[in-house]
Image (tube, rainbow, N blue to C red):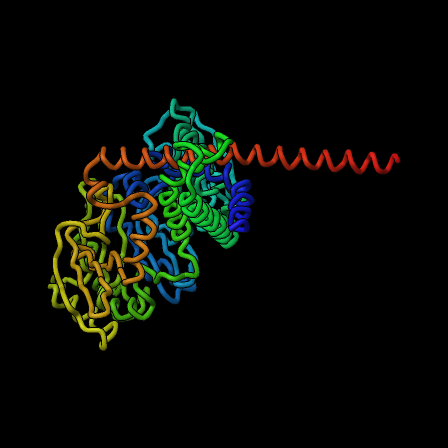
Length: 492
C-alpha cells in the first residue's frame, strides 16, 4: 500500500497542474471550440453564380493532360467570377483548373485578398501575408498541401482573419479575435493544440495517450488508496489528516474521484489508442462495389455532359460536387436553398431501399441484412447535437451488427457504425462530455450537471496542486539540510 501511495504522490506532483488546466479549460470547451471552417460554412461563403453552359468544358477535357488515374473528389465553384474545377486524385494530389479554358488556376496575394473580401462582403482595409508554413490557427498537416497560404487580416471590429489556399483559392479557415481568445484558454491547452506540437500528428497523438495513460494510473491509485484508508476510523468527523490540504483532497477525491477517473479514461479513448476502432467510412473494397467501378474522368461522357449542361443552364449555384454511384455520375448542386442532386444519365430513377440492400449485401455475402429502415430521427449513433446531419437516412443493419446510414438524396453512405464504434461512442463521447440524450436534450440540465462535475474536478486538482507545492517544499528543505550536514563534515 505504501508503494501505491508513493506512486500516487509522485504522479500527482507532476499531473496536478495539468489536470487543473484541463478542468478549467473544460469550462470553456463547453461553449467554445477551436476555430475552424466546416464544409457547410465554406460552401455558404461561396458566391452565388449562374452557370453559363458555354463556359463549362467537360472535366475529361480540362484534365486530359494531368495524370489522373482515379478521381477521389471533383467540385465546381467560382473564383472571382470564373468557374473552377477542383480535383483531388486517388493519390491525394490537388489540381485546380479553370472550367472555361482548362488553364491552371492562379491564385496570388491580390486574388486571395479579393476572394476574402467577396466571401465576407467586406469593403474595408485589409492586410495580406503569405505563409510558407502553418501557423497556430491552421496547425494540422491536412493544410500542408495548400501551401503557400494567404492570411488576409481584415481591419474590422471582430479582428477577422481569413486563410486562403494558393492551390484552390478557397477559404480554409476563418477566425475572429474573440474566437482566438477563447481558444487560448480553452481548446489549445485542453487538447495541447500548440502549433509546434500539433503539426506532428504521430508525436501529438502519442503525447496525449502517454499523458492520459499516466494520469489514469494516478487517479486509479488515488481511488484505491482512498478506499483503503476509508476503512480506518478517522480521528474526528471529516478529519482523517492533520493537514487540511490532505483532508480536502481526500474527501473531494472520494466524492469526485470516479468522475475524474472516467473523464481521463474517456480522454484517452478519444485518441482511439492502438487503432482499435474501424473507420466510419466505407473500406476501399466496399467503396468500389458502391461505385460499381473506380471513378474516372472517362465517366464524363459527351452525352451525359450535354444532359448536365441542359439541366443546369443558367441555374444559380454556389458549388457543384460530382460523385459516382452504381456506375453513374451524380451532381450535388448547392444554392441558397440547400442541396439538389441530379444524375448525369437522364435515364436514372431514384433507387428504393431494396436497391441499397443489394449493394450492401454485396459488401460481404456471408453477412446477411437484418433490417432496412428509413429513419426520420437521430438514433444513439447517427446524431448531431447541432442538428446539422442530414435526415431522413436509410439505416441498413447486418447480422454482424454493422449499420450503414445512407443519404437517399445523394446516394452516399454518410456513416458506417460497427460494434467497436458503438462502444467507443459511449466510452468517449458518453463519459467525456456526458453525451447522453436524456441530458443533452434537456438543457440546461446538461450544463448544470457538467458544470458541477467540472467544479468538483477543479477542486480536486487545486487541492492536489496545494499538496504538490508542500511536497516540493518539503523535499527541498530536506535537500538543504543534507547539504548543510555535508558542508559541516567537509569543514571538519
